Structure formats: structure tokens, C-alpha cells
Length: 164
Image 1 (cartoon, helix red, strand yellow):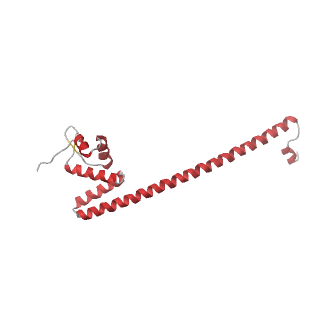
Image 2: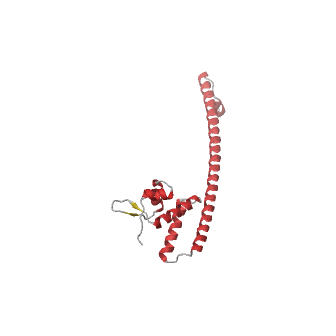
Image 3: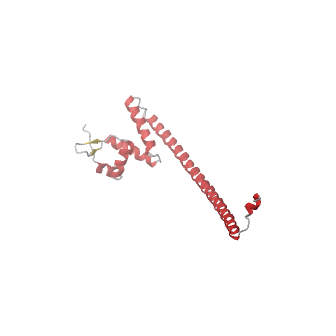
């Protein structure tokens, strides 16, 4: 049986995605897509299956890093010949999706905590800035008082305090 090859435009049409998305997935997931002598991508039916799986995992909320790990684990299982049964593979996929969902939820929670901390930091910085402005204002008042006393020729409150 002769292997059929698809060009990037055909694959984009079959999967109903843009060509740039295919190129992005190839680069980010380190997919090994065959090329002809001109450098054009030649997708096989196996590549289409892989891309369908990738798109399915993306639609379930997995990011490219999690998908890359899943693909690497699948490739390792195929290379070592310890490929799980299809029921086991489905369970592994469900478990992986569940773990990815938990990671995503934890990530969301951490991002929310980070935002709350940033807001607290902003409030603290504003308080510190306000205190600094108040201190500068008091220092300016004391300097103006001191200058006024110096111009009048009176002993300054500081020199009186020091006894000079």
C-alpha cells in the first residue's frame, strides 16, 4: 500500500486550521515532518493523526508543553515496544488530561495570588511614598524656619538648644 503525502494547504483544509498554526505546532512540539527536495512539508496519515490528537488536547485546555510531554511519552512507548493497549492508552490520556487540568487550575490560582501580592505591594509603595512626601514637607518647613531665623539675626532654636 502506497503512503499518501499531503501538502500543508491540504492539511490545513482537512483540519480546518491555518497554515501558520501548523508551522507553529511543528516548531513548538518538535514534530518531525518529512520534506521534499524543495523543502515543502509532506504530511503523512500518521502526521494527520498526531495533529488531530494535538488539536484535541489543545481544545481540552492543555498547553504546548503538556502536549509535547504527552507526545514524547507516546513516542518512547512506541520505540521501546512497550506500547500500552488502546484501553490503557485512553486511560493514560484521560489521566494526563486530568493532571493537566489540575496543573492549569493551580497555575490560575498562583497567578491570582501573584496579582493580590502585586496589589498589596502597590499599596505599601504608595504608603511609603506618602510618608516620604510628608517627611520632605516637614524637613522643608524646618529649613524655612531656620533660614528665616538666620535672616533675622536671631539665634536659631538649634543653637539655643545647644547653648551657643
